Amino acid sequence: MVAAFTVIIAKALGNQNNYTKQTEDHHIVAENAWDECGRVNHDFYLNDAREVIIFHYGKIDTSDNIVKISKKMHKHVHTTLYYFSIYTNFPKKYCDKDSRVKVENKLSLYKTALKGVSLIIDPTAGV
Image (cartoon, rainbow, N blue to C red; front, side, top):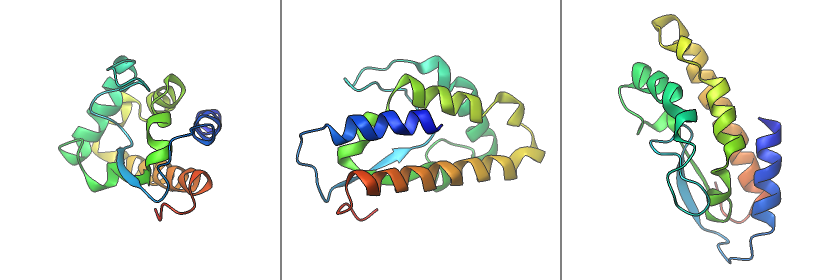
């Protein structure tokens, strides 16, 4: 997970677009695995994680699975490394009622980390 966030920071800080003070919603476990060019890619990494989120929440689009991050950072989150970290942290074995707290804790961890990285990239975004 640390490696994924290091890559995100490096790419976003190199982003010359002037998106300061702007935020976007980011799904921690996405419905589609978009790459930086806007194509659906790396989707197989998310199949199990999607099943886990849907098992516990009934849908992907739930507040526990959404975090507000800086627009400058958002497109740089969509990397193979990030999707692989989602794949390893939300295994299919979490599709049981006893894993609900684990899933909530993992989502909370990602939410905290993404907000923190977002503040490093754009302290004016107000996430």
